[in-house]
Image 1 (tube, rainbow, N blue to C red):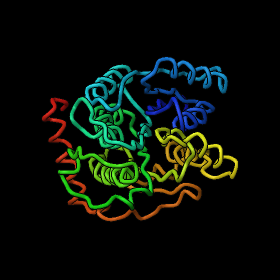
Image 2: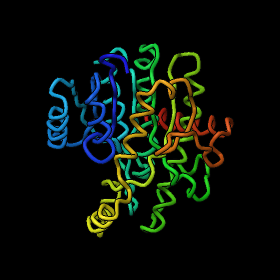
Image 3: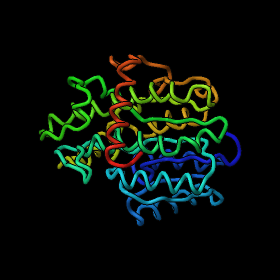
Image 4: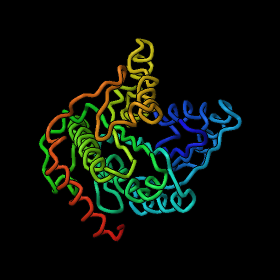
Length: 290
């Protein structure tokens, strides 16, 4: 990675995002991080400074479940940095009950899919200004268990669900992320901006913190050396920094070996991926965000 690249990373105060920030802090980068909590941001900043006292770290605050906050954060970042070399859309959650955002969206749809769409759209000029920029979207093989995709209905679906049924919606949000990656890659063709998605594998992080037995499960899995989040962080950092991934766009890569994997249909269907973006854009326009 070139000296003093500007890297925007969401979800940097916990889980995979914090590990990714820690790895990037070892390099000559300017970290631009998002956070909801100022106390967690300060803890993360102290951690990053302990890794590299010279690292540049700036935080922008907001709730990624709020589209107004996402738009404001994007505007603040683009007004502060004329060019962005890397955008890592990492923030995500797995909710085990339905929660409706202030905008009327399912929280998982808002945070996992709509927020990265809107943030990337808001930062698109700064990415283009870099000359050669990279967008990395953290998806998941959970996308293969998405149930049945219905567009545009799924984007506005606020039906209740059980903890067991939550996995299907989580998988659907990750399917949408991969589809968005394909369409965004085509939109950026010829601009020098590449866009790729990845599967970070199963990771023991705070993603399932809403489960009553999450802390016990985490201790068991750590004892058995299952779900090491360092592996998930590694593939994110590789896509963000390694030159070979900057030669590819619209790809989907796997944890561990870093090889390309073929996502489940309708990923790769240009017509459906384009329709998804058109529907998403219409939603943003209806909310006065575009």
